[in-house]
Image 1: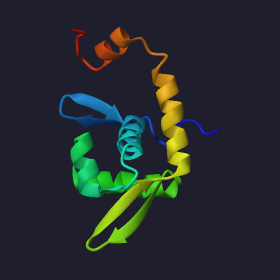
Image 2: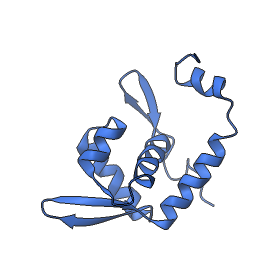
Image 3: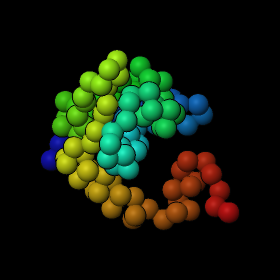
Length: 114
């Protein structure tokens, strides 16, 4: 198994006031696509995860190379769909996140539990 650091997935990116790692962004995109079996355009994905469409496209390029998503041309846009490998990654991410207590996770992202 290749670690996230070796893939360059832990490099921090600034988004508003919150720093996101590449790994967090990849998981956000995969989780969005896991709920969209019909796929989504890069613009839709970018809007849902709060990214610039160009930057999101670069993520999709890498995710396609890693076998997590596929792209199909539809008119002027590309429709991105999650692969079986991408779905397995979502399952693993969900299992890992289930081990983090809610109060710790909320403190990490700067929110308070209500």
